[in-house]
Length: 218
Image (cartoon, rainbow, N blue to C red; front, side, top):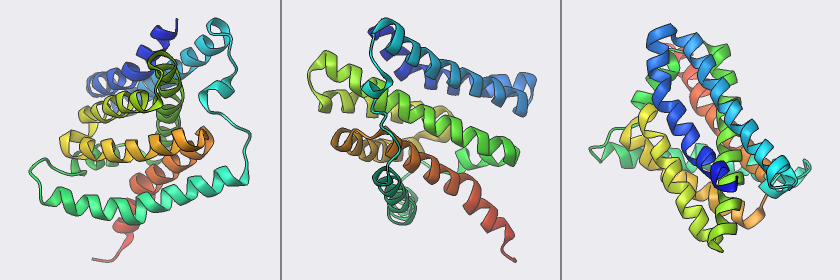
């Protein structure tokens, strides 16, 4: 069952990303988004069930720790790095390359009502950390005997999973951000900090900063 869990963790999110636009076109953006979010929740729930019922391990084996002030500090510190150092640098790099930037993904996000976008950020960012950093890295490390091989596989699939909704340019940046999050996870094994960093970064980038930009007088 571990192999099934790994396949769900790695391939479940990109399948949801590929099916999402078709659902939105068929049933509307809101309903299609809700179905996609339900799919992500189902994938995470399946990983939990496999962990507890079939692997007979605690959720702590996925990197979950009790909430500590260190987790909050690390998470917010990583988020600040992504927002104020990584993102400006990567936006400049993408402007020099022919792959496109974040425009495609931001345009799709702007079409979603704010209340639903908040829910989407909370669920998707949390699910990605649980699946890619928690379950996939831990179980692949158990199979390969190396956290670095496990991390490399997870990062590559994580980057590819962002192509459908974000395009090639933005997806390439997730290889770097995903690698940073993965190295941090392997170092600290603190999934809570990873989740905080991912949620805060996406919340600021997809909700707060666009709202501030729209509120500025022209």
